[in-house]
Amino acid sequence: MTDPNDSPRSNFIRQIIEEDLAAGRHQRIATRFPPEPNGYLHIGHAKSICLNFGLAQDYPGTCNLRFDDTNPSKEDEEFVDSIQADVRWLGYDWGDRLYFASDYFEQLYGFAIELIGKGLAYVCDLDAEEVRQYRGTLTEPGRASPWRDRPIAENLDLFTRMRAGEFPDGARSLRARIDMASPNINLRDPVLYRIRHGVIHHQTGSLWCLYPTYDYTHPISDALECITHSICTLEFEDHRPLYDWCVDHVSVPCKPRQIEFSRLNLEYTVMSKRLLTQLVSEGHVSGWDDPRMPTIAGLRRRGYTPASIRDFCERIGVTKADNRVEMALLESAIRDDLDASVPRRMAVLRPLRVVIENIPEAQVQEMAADNHPKIAELGTRQVPFAREIVIDRNDFAEEPPKGFKRLVPGGEVRLRNAYVIRCERVIKDADGQVIELRATADLDTLGRNPEGRKVKGVIHWVAAAQGVPCEVRLYDRLCSVPVPGAGGGNFLDDLNPHSLTVLTDVLVEPSLAGVAPGERCQFEREGYFVADADGTPQRPVFNLTVGLKDTWGKARR
Image 1 (cartoon, rainbow, N blue to C red):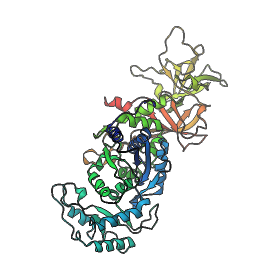
Image 2: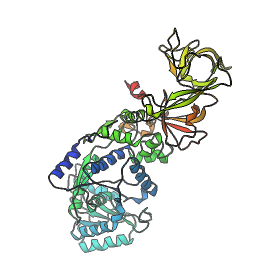
Image 3: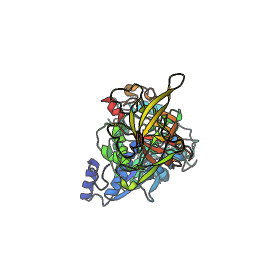
Image 4: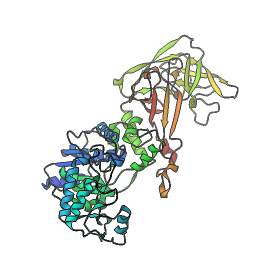
């Protein structure tokens, strides 16, 4: 993990801020994180959160949380609540600086009046499709709307009546009067306001039927909050001239500087909120917090920690170059964090019954086991050992492959924290399937090696009667290819059919009885797991966070 005492890694945004402060352009910096409340945040948003709040912490300054809520038909209070919870969970606080773009609706309306009065905005009667047709292409200039030269007084009257609800949806819009021949299509008289009847805004209710567009609202909201550095992803680079035009032509108190950086593209998943919404709405996942999802809620439910996500964001850095980050880097961050902090426990995911015939039937022996092999301060626990135990089916082979160091007929293996046992007999059912092993224990091998022979393998186990039954959910990557939907294909065709495996007959050691949701541990020799809220004290449910090794990376090499 990155040392919390280390200085943050420098990047071009930090260099810009340092130059601005050194030149006296600002006495302090102000940033903002401006999510749209139309879905849950994902790991890409985490990069922006860490960047914006991190800059405010380091220089120091302030960072606002502002919801850009200009499209009420797709927004919901659930998303507002989830976003606030995610930002707090990541370790950041906006203090009393929680804002909504809708807080400024009246001021935004007034600025639109100001633009109309300056001859810089007009009411257009073209519908949305006609506006697109008139806009032109990347190689051809646009055509002026027939209503581009409407008199100011008429525009003011029509805009007032638009607010009053006199016109139906799509009948009229307010457009900026900029340059229909501009090589930047965003400057070809963009729409500033559109009519939306019948929607209930989560903040303003039914007060408005006239809603400002994002490209108009965002820069003015930044300016009203006196944001110094408006940091966004590269897809908004072509929108920057419009951002600057808006703040240059209305009476706002300051002029923020927009800076773009590359968005996070992560392998084996999708990072589009539209596609994530499709996964949820069509039932391909169980919800926004499904542990296969790249949402912050999904990662939290899967067992990721705030520290691991912050560390991941620090590792990938901030640049202007588009790239695709390997999933292994995110998995490495959580492994490093959990390896140094969580206790070890034994869990048998695919139980195979073993009867140790020289252990008395009524005998239960408590074995001491370290909670962590490297952190003595975490102490020890007692693990019951009895005549009947279970081991993982993968730890036994009648016909072992080369290099197999686990249990075989007539062979020996060490039970972790317990004895060396020998497999004496294999019991099968009528179909020839192995259902039970009969074994003997070398009772002189507790805490020491057997004399005269070397036992290479060590396996985990759980006492059959004392073990706690539970469900384990093994999560794999959401998609089976690094770039889902590459080449214009349907990303749904690339969903991994093995992204979830549910094991219902798992036994875990008794120390995990009553485990609280969110508690993490390492199942020895299996991976890192977290208790899910679906479980009960009598029957816990555990989600796989990450395996002990990068099996995907190994398979691809």
